[in-house]
Length: 257
Image (cartoon, rainbow, N blue to C red; front, side, top):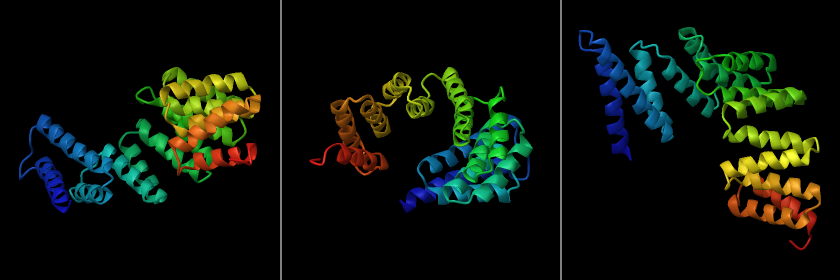
C-alpha cells in the first residue's frame, strides 16, 4: 500500500514538474495535456479516498503558484469531507474568482450554506447554478433548491424544482425520491406511488425506496404489502437507518415480529 502511494505521488509530482517546466515554457498543447494528467491522477486518489495523497498533490500545486478552478473545487470537496466547511467556502470563492460561471462551485457553495442554515445565500448560489447554460448537471442545483424550499415549507416551489430536475434528467433518482416524499406527506398517494416506482426502476436495490413503498402501502391500508416492503428494507440494508425505521414500523404493525 505504501509503495502504491509512493508510485502514485511520483506520478503526481512528475506531471507537476512537467507542467512547471525546467527553465523554459512548454508548448500550450503540452501544458494542457500535462495539466489534465495531473488532475486525473488527483481524481484517482480522491476516488480511492486517499485524501492525504490528494492533499499532498494540492499542496504541490499551491507551492507552484498554479491557479486552477478544478483543483480548487477538488480541495473544497476534501475540506467538506474532513468537516472544514469554512475552508471549503474560501476555496470555492477562489474558484469562482477564476470563473464566475463555474456551476459546480455555485452548487456546492449553496449546499454548504444550506447546511449552515444560511438559506438566503444558499438560494442565491443555487439560482446561479440553475441559470448557468454552461453547467452540465443543472438538475443537481434544481434538486437542492427544491430541498431548500421544502425546508422553508414552500412546497409548491419545491415540487416545481424537483419536476424541473426530472425534466432535465428523467433518470435523476433524488428528485423522484423527494417528490414521492412530498406527495406522501400531502396524502397524494397515487402520485407518491408513481414517483417511488420511477425511483425503484432506477435503483431497485436502494433500501430507502422500499421503505417509502412500505410507508405508502401502510397509509393505503395494504398491510401485507407494507410488511413485505419493510422486510426487504432490512434485507437490503441491515445496518442502515432505513432498516431501523423499517423495524420500528414492523414492531408497530405486529408485536410478533
